[in-house]
Image 1: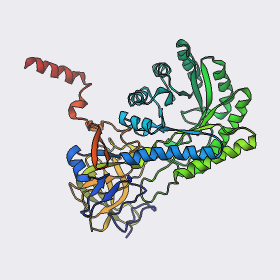
Image 2: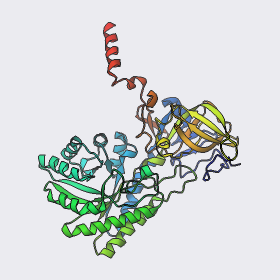
Image 3: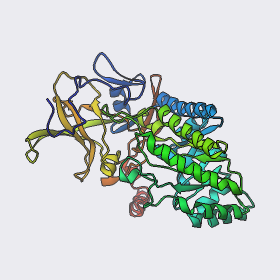
Image 4: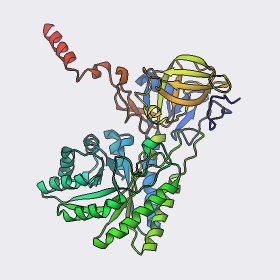
Length: 473
């Protein structure tokens, strides 16, 4: 029976042990014993060896997603007579190991800070295959990127034209740049994730583009290589992408009268399935709609189709990752302020908003199942919450778990590969969890978990006291 506190999209599952293949990493199965295994590694083994909370990344799923994005973009682009390249949007999840996978699998990488740039380089990505974003790139970040030979810098405001030109001139280099445009298309997503509307911090209005492109072209140390857009994130409908791309192509055609423009970057933001109720389109649906619309618009305008670029991040990383938690306390809370009084089961775990900030930031919905065992119990409406001092510390806002969920159960939350580790924090002095890659039955630690000692490495009073104690001994 549906709990009246449940949202309309959530219905009690027929089987609380079932795994939706669209949500979980490719190599996730439930053993005959009832325990989950990830790429051949049992959940209990992972928790026992590395502790919880624990980010688990299915390497095969991640890399296949990356290669699939590249293959689809290249295939559809070839069908309309052009080429395409894919940048992995590293803000989704980045480490030097991840950067090495991206490089080995032939993708480019998109970074938005000096730290991300350093990680990409340290992972072996050649600078010419890196694109640098950001609405407030520091002079130091710009200078380092120019020195390294970054493939492109995305100009986000007029003042950056002079800054990039100055850095390139000081080194007597010619720096390729793109110009980020706000097309005015409002993505169907959370307000904080919609990045092409006019009233926000990224990019420039489309009407201002001709003057700024002329200014870029007037700088002898800059090379204008094309326009850039980013409509938003976690979008389920291709229509917004298509309309935005058409507007960008019309601007592209206008700018061609004063010089060649080799490419156009159409961004990312393709939605994924976080829970069984989601119905995200396939990547092919997005890219075919966007690329064919670009080709049709170019034909109508009588221009050649430019080289294309895309920036998926969540699509590659999201469903490749899960998070394991240990269940602590459980409360059945009677809620009497709804139309029909009902009970919601609060399941507290040993992490929370410090390892997954998205529910608190965006009211994002996630999906959880028991990982250490199966259950014959009836489904009960549950809210999985963390251990932080915030009522908004929610990991899974709405889901059904077995009514017999108990302390010390292992819980797995799906689709946490993107924007969970990246947004993690030390709130309440919790330590960041480790990240383990699993492949062919073998777990491999790629980012070690923090210790309490790590929390004090920059605390000067603590370090001073420790040094004094060491001298005393």
